[in-house]
Length: 585
Image 1 (cartoon, helix red, strand yellow):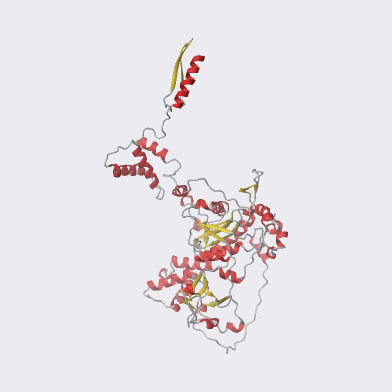
Image 2 (image 1 turned 180 degrees about the vertical axis):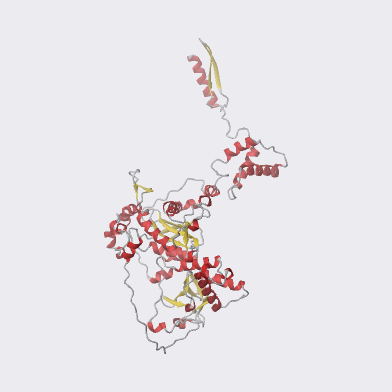
């Protein structure tokens, strides 16, 4: 037996040297009979695909790769598509198809982990992942790396006159502390929303009536007393850190790659870093953060829609819906109360991996080493964040989107070049797309901004933006007026807002005069967008002498001969926010 064992070892070494794939066996005699010693370590292993035709395997792989960007189909379609690929490449019937059961087993092995017959969203997400290992970004200071993104909010909101609608959530998260520096809810995300989101991140979150005193920064783990000596704005601030971004990573959405957002980043000296196309893995923190907001916050609000249509219930629009501003108030309070004090799995102590930190605790630890420098924004800074366009100052004023803006302060600049040769001597104009009432012109000869009102500012009952203006102009063109004037468009906007404000039950002429669903939705979105939701550009306050000079409502004139007696003035009660807060809760 000992001699036989030595022979087996010799044969095994010889087989290894010659790369022999045959098993080595040796028969030996023993007292009980013949025993076989077999070494199967070098025996060939069976293939994962068995004896399948390589041409069929290549055709199945091609059918699987074609399904990445298409809608989800069944295996029967993949079988039919595989047969068509084989006929196109090798001829009609040149390659035989395996049986139904064999094809199912082969397809299951080749499509494992690809979700060919599963969720299309998951299939596209897995296809967009990089092939190499994920890179870990090492950040050591708040604001060193931040990520911004927007997504439709999974909640129906109540717009004006009870119109239900969807809104979008735009958030800015800090990678080092996982702090949501700012989050806004808007009807549609525009470049001005992304720019003003930066302004909200640089501004302390004030304590609001009705909030518990435990949400104040002075009652939190943040070093409030030390930060207050550097920034006086934090005296009555809520427990949300103020983080100044250094680098912002975003996708290639229109709101983020726009010239306005890039200009805002340059103004605030922020490094702008867009991701590659269809690469959500390059900004995973904001992607997961927005999903967490949906699971931790949105599902507790009436009107929750679910993440997909298959998770949506019936009659969601009939539930008692909150308005967009109320959703914003709840979101701001939830971020301070819940998110900033919730232990995050990505914030762990390297020395003690079992311990997790909250965003506020992580910020308090990093600010000790990184420091804090306040950055206060002035009124001119907010105007700088608005979208810019270039126009000429004519004799009648400045024309933007068929609207004329004019004021006496433009007298020295009429028909004059700005001196900016790369812009053909035009003047830089900043405007708010949600409010068409005012624009701001930069004084290239000096410094500062000139606020310019709209000529027909007094002809509409309330502010509106480009959405209502474009909708009214398109409605006039559809009625046979190919070139509507500015006065006609302004009057059409006013009538649109009045009709939508009356509602379907306020009409007395029958169903034919009721406003359409499109008109009500445009009016509701215009009002929701014009409402204040945080830092906004400052509006000039006219002096008492100028109130009677500029601008005048259309069709009205000054009347200084009014001798009617003045009615008795009944003063209103003083507003007490704390009593109103008690009523609310």
